[in-house]
Image 1: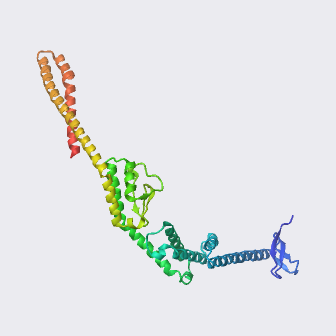
Image 2: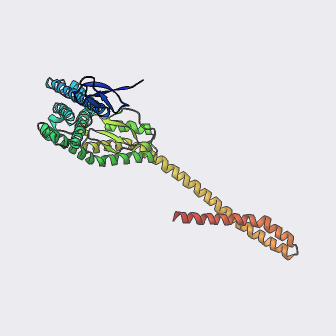
Image 3: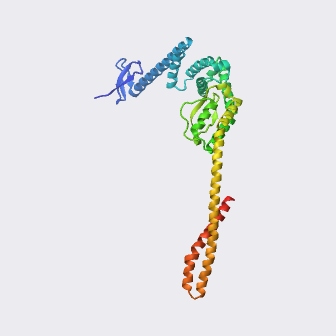
Amino acid sequence: MVKLRDAKCPNCGANIEVNENLEKGICQYCGGTVLIEEAIEKYKLEISGKVEVDGIQGRNTKITRARQHMEIGEYDDAEAILLDIVEEDKFDVESYIELLKIYVIQFKNSSLSENSTEYSDPEEWLLINKITSYYDRIKKIDKNNVSEKLLSNEQSEINKIYKLIENRNNKEKELQPITIRINQIVKNAYEYGIDYMEFFKHFEKAFDTQPSSGYSAYLTQFKINKILWDGSMVGEEYDREAYIKTYTPVTTLEGLQQRCDELEKSIKPMIDNEKKIQNRNKVIDEGINATKGLAKSTLVVIAIIWIAIMLLGSIGLCFTGEIGSGIGALVIFVLPPYLWVRKVFKDRKKNKEDDK
């Protein structure tokens, strides 16, 4: 059975079917000679061009629809349409620009824009991160610089956003000494063996934190890397974010220093108690070690006297002709205590060297 392919007559432009195995054919409409390969390629070119045109028309219709939603304040609907476009084409500059306009409008309505402060709802900072992400994307893909003109009305707000980010980063750097101090307080608590659950009760009270999950089970895992602009504390080994409830008064160096003072003051009785226990245990250990040392020294003296007596006895046996008995006495009664005394002196010498 002959397989026919769709083609287009290069003479009259009619759509025809041809046998792809032949080199030439006849158009059934105009009767002209048709080169089969050329006719097939012409048909493919027309179809691909039609698909491309339809795609462009569909995309333009979507952008028009998104702008209509924006004009009447339906920003969520406009955003959904534009996100659908950029999902298909991540280099569509115009759609990214329209998205950015939506987010800038939302920013204008936020407390951040009104108050120009770095203290605000974390949700608003998610919006800022979205704006900077899209703005950076536009700058990367906008080869013709169309965004400069299309975003001229939004540029002042965008500049304000980057200024806020700069202020936020500077604030985090200012708060870094506090994180160091908190970690030192935690380290002291760990070194003195304070119960971790008891410590965390004092920590939450001092910093007025709002937990989102449980603390790590050990103080060794408690490590704050930094305190953020919104008052949250985060760290790689800190298995939750503890948000300070009252943002502005606390996220100042003075406020946080005072809270560190409160924490140190509240756990001081526990540390003092642990110090007493450790000092008492130290005195007891030192007494035990001293007693052990005295007992060992006494045994060494007794052993040396014993060795001397047994050595003289063995020599006496040898002089009386009982050489075998003298050697046996040396091996049994002199050699073991001698080796023990020798080991004791070696151990003492090694300990002195280790202390140095």
